[in-house]
Amino acid sequence: MVQCEMCGAETSSPKTIKVEGAKLDVCSNCTDFGTEVKQPSSSGTSTKYSTGSSSSSSSENGQSASSSTSSSSSGGSSQRRRSDMFDDMEELATDYDDRVRNAREANELSQSDLANELNEKASLIRKIERGDTLPSDRVQSKLEKFLEIDLSAEGSSGGDSEWSSGSSTGSYTLGDVVKRKD
Image (cartoon, rainbow, N blue to C red; front, side):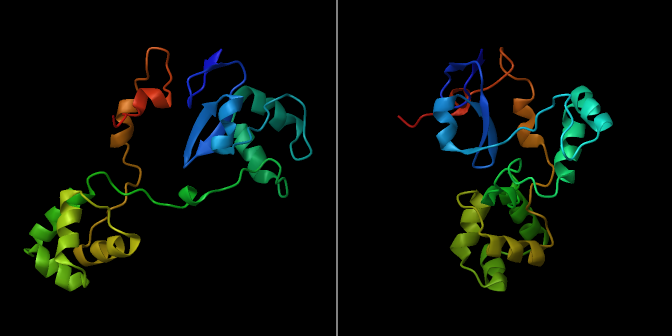
């Protein structure tokens, strides 16, 4: 029995769904909260798009062979999951505020000077440097071009290090992570 990562209920057959970019294993009651991710079967039977050798390696290697099988299918829309807007978005670095402040200070600019150069309000620059607000895509690109910095979190796994150890059961539910506002 596996715990549902959404509600915590015990389930014998969890389904994988995607909720706002995160893949979760949930019970049948919680599948309506996201988009179901179809898992390619790793059985030994050969399919229309696989050869006998690749189907036997898919049961041995799991992930790598099944991903090559699904990428070679040219019209299997039944096996493809629906993409959402979060698939194409770049993540903003967690230390974006420090990066902007350090780059501005390195260029010996005040917040109001930087705001004038970017044709933005000084209060917006203050809020960004304090971390009170996230820059819009337009402001982010202006900051990156003018200050010659990168604000995207490309491959920096610093924020994911807390998840590597796992809980005592080896998995997390949303209840382990979410903090309530009482």
